[in-house]
Length: 125
Image 1 (spheres, one colour):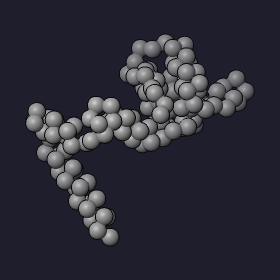
Image 2 (cartoon, rainbow, N blue to C red):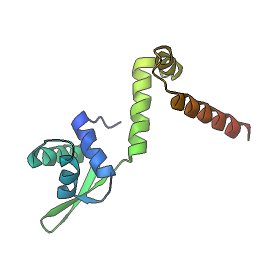
Image 3 (cartoon, rainbow, N blue to C red):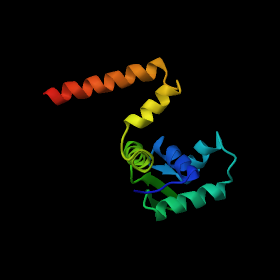
Image 4 (cartoon, rainbow, N blue to C red):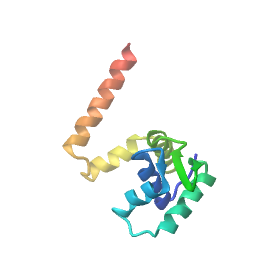
């Protein structure tokens, strides 16, 4: 799995918002919620290319970036890695920990119930 730092993930988020994207587009998206210098963002883009998380093409003097992994694919792999590392691959201890500390909203509970119901219905088919 590709390991991303918090900063690299922020750059990926900016790219996932719309791609392919020019470096200046990504810089613009990030400038809304960070004070990173343009050079910092370009360095992060270079790191992401080396990690094979993104690819680029050069058109004239501009670099056009595109992700090589979708946000959904990355978050699923990262979630599995987190569960494996901290909870021996089990989801129940994580959720029960949140429930015991009353950090699950009613919306969270309703959505979890729906996910389980959908899974059970699909399994019965």
